[in-house]
Length: 88
Image (cartoon, rainbow, N blue to C red; front, side):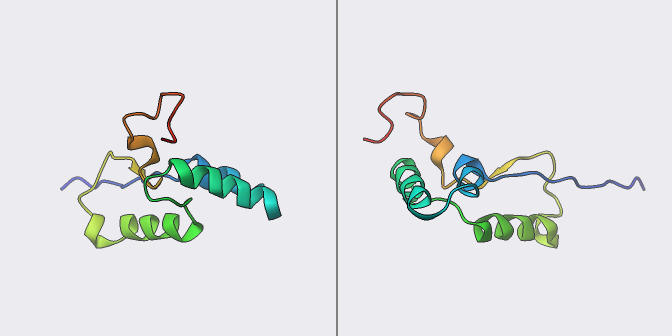
């Protein structure tokens, strides 16, 4: 029997990555702006990413291979993402 190694990548989305460099009012403004364009109406947290990673490391994900799991609150699945008026 051939052995396979699972390699996993979790895409955290721009909001979570960029928010790490902000503090105070700038972080609040950033979160508010991203929440307006995110269907779930909030930015992602470290806990959101950790939950996805925990799942992918579990036996429940043992048959998942060659996929990218986007943990982005569905922001990049919106059909109007590329338009200039994405907040309506």
